[in-house]
Image 1 (tube, helix red, strand yellow):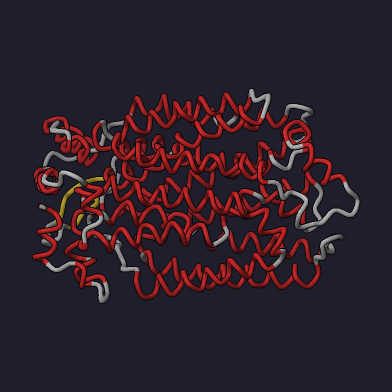
Image 2 (cartoon, helix red, strand yellow):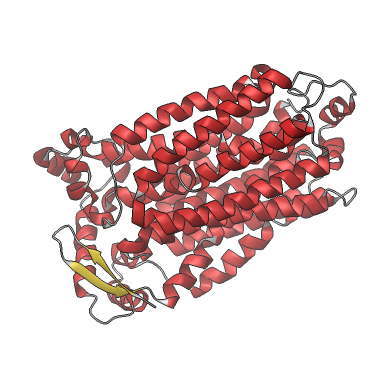
Length: 505
């Protein structure tokens, strides 16, 4: 494998190679993202299947059969939305529990616990005989998502050399998109299997969970986590293994120094409330809020429903969502290639322009031609699918992966797991809000919902332009000195004397 170098805040370089073992660890850990993505993709397809609706949501199924149903309101049912969204409330709670587990037990055991939760949830939902059983299964899946989304991005950021940290971390989001694509393919085929095709779709969530559970036995813990827990010799051994060289002392000493500073912090959650912690905390939370208010999860959750709304039949709508899933995967590969070359901000700003235009044009088409009853003509419906693909493309190489990458690399070690817990929980909270509200919003706002998301994209662009610093190529333990202290706005929060008081008090 090729050689690489990581630059410290003093300009010193850490030697190292991109080893095959690191790549294996990254791929196995990224199955935590595939679990999350599979669930995002599977939910919308299952909730559009007639067999599933007849068994659990007969009122929605009856409404769907009406010849002159309201296009925008036929799926508006709070219990149907709760099936999708209950997972994210559980994930919100789970992320804070996972933060403690990450610090005390390590990143690797946290991922293993995530896979066990996910396995249990997939069994319950696939075997469900009533709504209560489905919801309990979704809650278990939610804890799996909370634990996985907490541990995997941190694991990837701490394992990766700084010069390719962005690319390796984005493997998490790449696997999210692969999970969505696989789920769409599964839904497309199981929709023709009556009456239990939906059970096969839901049971499929256990496959990536099983791969992560078994595969995690073969991967290492991160050196940072080992040093945090006073396993110093083991940390040296692992650092040599993942860097592929013997001279790991400079990097090892840097991690030890960061861990010693972190140990002086007795309450990381309290430290997060200090003035010097505000820049990464504010950035992390708002990135998660903005990520959801692009409208992406509304589109990915309910892509089959959305395409049925504009006039595609059930099979055609599922096939259209397969296409968007494929676009999602290949566009994330673009991000892996570009993120450590062009940087984070360029991708975010370009995507804002792209996503705003597509949301705005979709809104115009629907408000002009899609009435509460009736369909779009075939050309307009195809245009909507293309525009959704262009929208997904922009999101997938920007706000999707970078919404996870930036928070995982910007917190100092003393508040890293606590800070990232806030990021994950914020993501889950607003994913829940969108998942629970989208079908009702679609019913009441109709095509105006796309203008709603377009307005948020304008705010996102302004935020990225003026408040988001570039973090490309900067070691995770050097962010305070090299990023926040030099930013035109955030440097006022990083006064050195206040900083010391914040950390050690």
